[in-house]
Length: 138
Image (cartoon, rainbow, N blue to C red; front, side, top):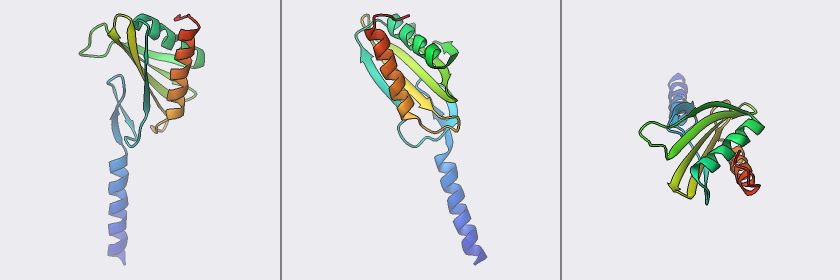
């Protein structure tokens, strides 16, 4: 009976190790978190990179706090990223210039325990779109 309990424990431990781990965020940083499942959303806007980025910065400052801004390694000025926090959830945002007048935004959100928060990622992307529609990228 003890041998069976040991086997069950080892299987459960293996599953726990396999589901917990290190993930790469949309801004190419590594954090501890649950790698299973979708955790980011994206959108494409007919706006220049600077305008979309300013709108995203406005949203993070309105809803939470901006923690870090950076240009990811191995990229040019056509990619900008930041990390912020909204209600104890971490939010990573990456804005990429597709061309001079089109930009792509990727938003990833995770809870303080490292689990996906797809609802927050969707909400953030919607708020950026509303900010752009209002004509104010700042």
